[in-house]
Amino acid sequence: LFAQRAAGERPFVVWDYHVVMLEEAEESSNLIWDLDTLLPFPCTFDDYWKAAEYSRSNKGFWKVIPCEKYLEHFSSDRSHMKTEDGAWLSPAPSWEPILKDGLNNLDDFISMDSKILTDIIEFTVFSL
Image (cartoon, rainbow, N blue to C red):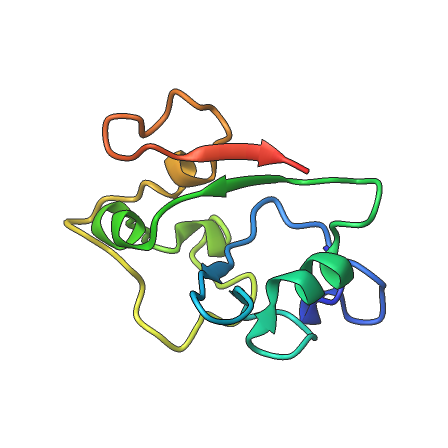
């Protein structure tokens, strides 16, 4: 993904997954909210698409999950951000994790297997 703070001096960073929010606007351009972008925050979808990755040859996959379903069902204890001995790989976000009843279902949400989570949400997986 191009235009990312995590890339440092490199032109791009390779994420195993990356979460952005798409705000659908009725009277203006749709907006992308990406906490790691070097682009304006928020950024219009068109500008983000052109600058971040999507005109390049290495296309990623998108899983679109409605916000209300994400907030209702997603849960992560942030264990993926730690070493085996519990040390943080990078500084943790300042906000509290979204954690429900000790459940950690991050892998279900980032999986591109269309059979996962179908009992909870209907989602679209696509590559452009």
